[in-house]
Length: 448
Image (cartoon, rainbow, N blue to C red):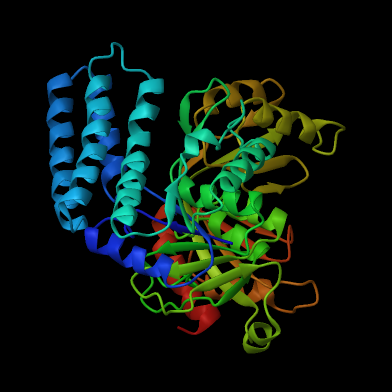
């Protein structure tokens, strides 16, 4: 059994939904199809929510009707029969009736905002399920809100997800295509919640792991994961195979094609993940698995695989008022970040100082206040970027760091992380140097 996820651009036009229908029925194996909201819908819903939070209810209503008009047009091009169109219209009328009802709630809270944003996936999946029914495809819609749960720490409840989903699949063993929503879930209070932006990839991986799928396929509008950011660097190429560890590093440090959380559930269950291009289905894409194939390893002469960049980084510089190696000093630092649920990306230490980077500054003031009780702090550096170079950096490989630093000649580097794993070298710099760094590394490491 396969799990196939299609993102917003892949379902953003009626003709693309038609193409997806052809794709998923071209093979006889049973599939779970995970859909995102139509491209532009989530942003439109968030904009409606902002209007409601600020009390601009007339403005919100105008935005709602504008979005509905888009869906009305979409329906006319999606369906081929009057019965199919009527089914699609019932879906849209029902969901927009609920959206309109949210404008009457005072005050408009985070709970309502999450319910509002979830409408994007609820609309796309119900429309697609109605379209498959019109086409006579053996299919069923399984609501993600009935099996996808997160706990109080916003982490998926893996055991409950697996139990619920397996029972629902057994109840529909006669169906070849199972459609469900990405991104949305319920929290411990039973309220509508979500897996954060980009979470449809995560949904697909959670489902694939839960059912021990043969393969998870993430369909986007690009031919797999590239060796560098094609929006910034002109000469890039798709990577044919990556290990789970390599892909996880790239996703966490900014590779836009893959949500950072996606790899973990698939890796836990050993389920391969394949990145495919909806616009070019015959392209091989990128396969992510426990290990690359012997053929791929033989073809890969370079130790460097890919480069990614993560923006919005803040660097903190912490100085001990006594020797750094004093017992418990590092522990006290990490406990403060743990207390405020703020992950650290990079860390560097010297005899009397510690430098760390974070990408979430929501609790920065509180963290600084507590750190200030036992150490000295410099002014943080904001607007930093981490550039991550991924590859096979085993300890017996010579000149790895030298090749990276030579490629970066003339570009200021604030921090370097090397040796934590055999797959990652990370460089911290001000965001203004990111584009130059990506191009310089592309030239210096790949000769492009």
